[in-house]
Amino acid sequence: MSMLRSLLVLLCSALACAQSEPPKAFVHDFGAPGVTGSFRAQIAPAGGGLVWLQSADHFINLAAARKETKSGADYLLLAFNGTDHALRLGLGAASASSPAFGVAPDDARAIWTTTAAADRVTFTLDGGAGLVLEKVLRHDPAWRGFELEIALQNKSSTATGSLDFVLGGPALVVPHESGLFGTLSVGIASPVTGDTLHVVPQAGAVQRLAVDPNQLSFAGSTNRFFGAFLWPKEAAAQQSLRSIDVDTVPPFGDPESGTLPNTSTRVRYGMQLAIPAVGAETRVKFGLYFGPKSYRVFSTLPEPDRFAPILDVDLNAPCCFSVTMPGGRPMAKVLLWLLGWFYDLVGNWGVAIMMLTILVRSLLLPVNFKMQKSMRAYSARMAVLKPKLDALKQKHGDDKAAYQQAMIAFQREHKMLPPLGGCIPIFATMPIYIGLFTALRTAYDVRQQPFFGWIEDLSRPDEMFSLGFWPEQFNLLPILWIILMLIQMLRQPLPTDPQQRQSMQIMRFMPLIFGVMLYTYAAALLVYMVTSMLWTFVESAITKKILGPIDPNVAALTPQTF
Image (cartoon, rainbow, N blue to C red; front, top):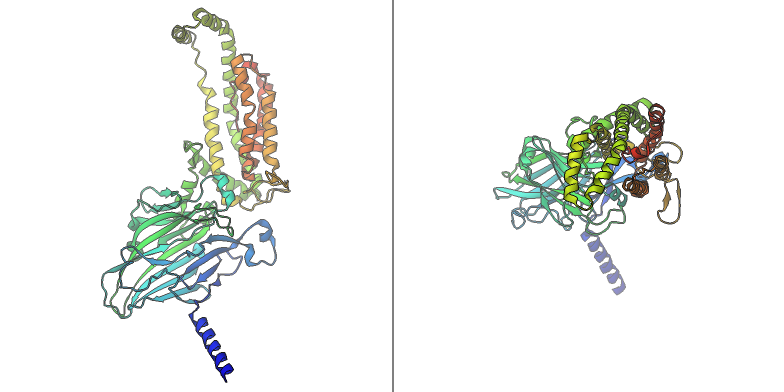
């Protein structure tokens, strides 16, 4: 009898424990895998949010995309928030101590009643003080995302006024390799009118964007190829917004997604909802976009121009030491448009890059030829004047002030200024190079796009074969570019002037430095650089045939084009 009683006690205890355990997170499919704008998400009733979000029409690599039968491990992980779930709704600082609602809705102990249907998940939380929160996440494939409804319902509360809430945005995955391409994870807020703001907050810091939320077009965060943006879909939602804050996550490295500490930018949306009368509700609607950053993709959305400002940010990347190259962004836009046009023509992004390169270099050929001609004429004139310059230097000896005055007078007399045409190719080529550099580093359109042979993903290094030691992979394209660049430079005779000769010898090491810097860069850029170098040989042959061999004194004055 006592044994039976003990078994009953144990059974009752087990049942009580089972009832007290919070419901487990579950996976829900929004749309059919492989269909544009479809997603898989893990839903967490505890705290009411998303643990992670996968894009069910993007894959982790080309091998996964080619599988006939795919599993969850094949789909691309877009966002991973760990214990701090995405789309959690917490009380703002002004309402955190208010008893009007009751339980903190973003607390892990706050269990939201969660119901899932084919195209939506509904979260409901009774705060225990007569007010109820409801969130409806409804799939919206046309926008490559969701419609998010947030409602504050009054069942029996006598409270008045309003409550402040904070909606946590998703933390997009930023793989370790993305650090090779500059800072690509930013928080962005774009007003309907005025300048778009973007920020990369300091690690662990919270920064408020100086934008009027009531004029917001959209706000969100990015990684290299994708963006997560929220925008108000109605006037009530627009008016509910109070602030846009950004911070960095995760606090520690995330081995599951490969995101390093504080490399993903997260946006938090502050909003205010009026407490309705008993039996009424306050409801607001927002749109959520989870998709590629691409003009071609944006053109398929119901409002093609809404998210275009994010590409303005991406294409305005600094050249070096935070110095922005003038003309880089508009040039990048033009080059992307031309690149897309060539792709539509031939159906291969690698071939399209080669065609674009040949077009650009062909257009610059007359300018380069004119520069070569003018620089050779200038060099010939300088060769005639060189004895006089040497005599002038010997006459004044160590008297630097007298030598400088004599040189100024000599330059005026003989009009020794180099031709302005010699600078044009440098200024014409650099915006093109920087424009294509910035365009290809974030070009979603080349992601997982094969070129030929072993090059199966133009957005990654070409990775011909594994080495088993640093640098892990043998990348042929950067090595090929170094060889071509060295051949081109070694073909140019060294100047006879000792100072110019020394400078030219130092310049011959530059290909090695650039090659090391770009060794792990995207194959798309290296296809451009190798094609450009091959075109340089063609251009040199044409110039040599018309103008004759290069004078040794001209070699140091001839700028290299990429």
